[in-house]
Length: 112
Picture 1 (cartoon, one colour):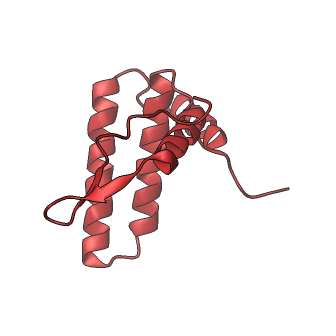
Picture 2 (tube, helix red, strand yellow; picture 1 turned 180 degrees about the horizontal axis):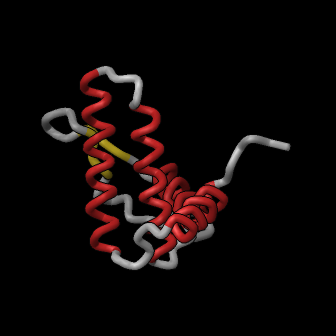
């Protein structure tokens, strides 16, 4: 038995936990706000060098998969699609050295 989870499995387990515990499953705006707060907590843990960084990042993932579930999004499918798009993109350095998407690069992911 593998201890690895797919994104879809994480999404299903997080959703089942929300239902079982009576957490928010319908207020999308609230869930976005809570996810934003968790991201802030993760940033603060990182900034302070706290050992809780991993747990805070996991909280962010759990809120994101809940948002996906609330909106009928299969986050595993969308993540795979977006990874393919990003892999196909080209970037070039702007005048200040920051990488920017190449304006000529507007193609979609292969097979998308």
